[in-house]
Length: 247
Ligand code: ADP
Ligand code: MG
Image 1 (tube, rainbow, N blue to C red):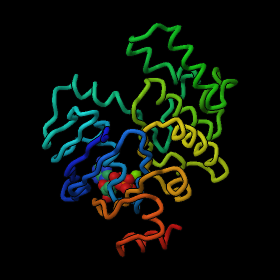
Image 2 (cartoon, rainbow, N blue to C red; image 1 turned 30 degrees about the vertical axis):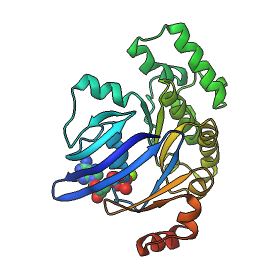
Image 3 (cartoon, rainbow, N blue to C red; image 1 turned 90 degrees about the vertical axis):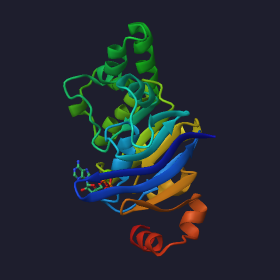
Image 4 (cartoon, protein in one colour; image 1 turned 120 degrees about the vertical axis):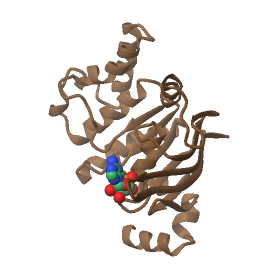
């Protein structure tokens, strides 16, 4: 069953058409790897899902509710309610430098005031344990490695119990030796059946962990399929050329 339905998404920046009628569905428990050259619209597509970009045409529905329908958005409160089902992890971590690791995890749920501080604190402790950083709860981000920072960012996204996690090149800012620890956390989440959309250059991750690969080029989805279909039998010249350059 589709948890996210994206239909004919259209977005331009000035005269540049960045998303040209993007259409695809994400099923519950899917791990979708989105790949494609720089500038192809991957980030814009992902950011549209959490309304960090406003689209001009097309529809996005999450769990059957429209975040935007034929380019028209509902009222702010409905937008918030729908986007709150998704957590986002960015390339550059975006941690708050003046807060400790534990405070970074707790800031959003504390602001929301839906749960007691004790419940929030318990969950942040559990998540820090899960990502192997329990001993760093009172540390500030500046003292962490890039891999540790990104693991904290993932834990922070999980604090709001999202149904879907979105990752925008989560390992692209890391030294190669630090990508493994972040990919492992993502792999663990996939094994726990978290629904994830992952924009990535890590072809190994796309092959091993994703159950679907979507290839974007120039604002379009050129081709998508299972990792086996996609990597072993790409159909389009643009895909073949991209794979030749990146495998
Ligand atoms: P990708 O993530 O695949 O590298 P992006 O979605 O970031 O691609 O960008 C797609 C295109 O849109 C690029 O040409 C980029 O320069 C342009 N773009 C992205 N954001 C903006 C913006 N805020 N203003 C103008 N152009 C933008
Ligand atoms: Mg990008």
